[in-house]
Length: 465
Image 1 (spheres, one colour):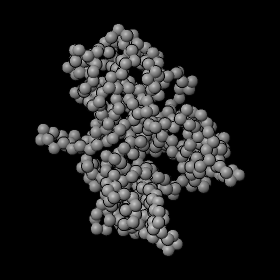
Image 2 (cartoon, rainbow, N blue to C red):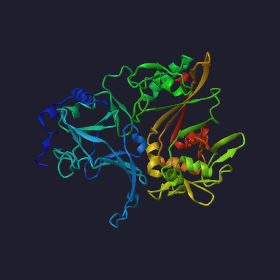
Image 3 (tube, rainbow, N blue to C red):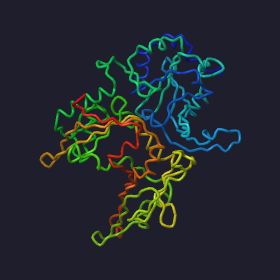
Image 4 (cartoon, one colour):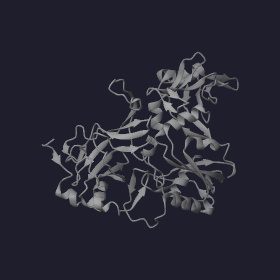
């Protein structure tokens, strides 16, 4: 380590301003900057605490999630025996703009606590951290600040400000947006409106509601406004009004809030509306091993009205045979009574009437989908109408629901309690000639039961705030 480059004790790092750090991040292609004020326990031994659940970190891009279970007798704490490793594309940044990869950096999710910690962030790195993350040197010092610059391509670029640096003194006065109890987003300019993110969102939704009918549109990846002609324009149009630019990473849509739009016939008719919450493809069972076509040919059905076509449909609820398919959905490795994961390699499994696994969604794979659900979500109903039979316009309702707090175990519990169900729409057309397979493995919930996926609900009339 002594031959490596020291980067956080240099003279330039001590005088570096936040404004200059933002410029360096921009040169690296960073689009969003988040930071965490480090506590004495945030070091390489204790592992920096990041969140309670992965869903609290939806703004950080992550890679593959893999399960691991400790069988070592040295590990006496059962809560730490079940864990999930979350891959990161992670780099350290110096004050002169150089990058140093951290190939072993990862998140570790302990669902039994629950907690998410950062691990392996110094292993195999080619620079000298100056002991600022070493608990036996400077790794317990207060006043350290850890920045996470996120690129649209998924890389995370980290910078450490030491207690005596200029940045550590500026950070408390610099404009920022609180995302969680741990992370803030650095605002690159002084906000004109200093209201909370919740109040800013409600104000924007009121403005959009008052515009009444809005022609279907979307923003491209460069922020340019485009007409949108497809039927599913409700979400894109709302995001365009809010200035949300689509990108390849899962990050909050509007100031820390995930925006979820859904169509209704009348604004007050929201309770019975079924909503699709995720569409993950199985990663196990016959469906994965032999393919969707083999799955539908074996378990699907045909009708005289549609010759040459196989369908696999039906609402599948946990621990109860589906009338249409005869199959049963189960959560294997999850204890409903305690609400705990008991097997890290567990899964959501669709079993045929002989108990054979037809489709399997491993917990690790389904977590990758559920992590995209943010800790704060706004659900907005909308009306739509066709304009000259060519494209649609949307009117966004004033009755909005704000949900906060979710987790993977909440999803599993909701499946067991029959709030969330598996509702596939898989088929083969031209099965006897040139078969074409359509895949749609969707999990759904009634709008009225959304609160079972979150910790809290606030019902808001945007015109009264």
